[in-house]
Length: 169
Picture 1 (cartoon, rainbow, N blue to C red):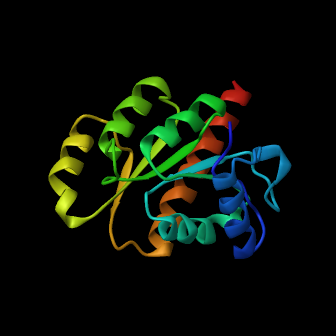
Picture 2 (cartoon, rainbow, N blue to C red):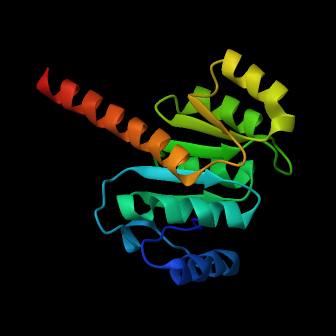
């Protein structure tokens, strides 16, 4: 099963790997690792490839294993193949919405930190998702790179602190 992308080099590699995904070439996370591989898997889900590309640029320096899906069904296939630590999803996408994806992931992959990117028009749905505990964090569009970076880095540090505590006990 192809992974939408898993890259660590320049923007040309992002484009190349996106093209490989479309052609059906399998790209496994172990084939392309980040410079400081932290072993943390991020999954970006957005029907706009430019948003995925922007997120990739933000997180590339941090050594995450990065993957992208352009709809909820692709994202669910990725979840079947690997353990995703952090999910960043858009609310409005063709087919299933981000809220539907979050509902399924919150049940089947409770360990995954879920971040929702939402526009002003989606605030009603976003509020419902927050009330039902489907979202750990959300950011409104347009988001600033520093905002989303801080959100994810806080998450990673929390995850590391919990793992260190567990190892010490």
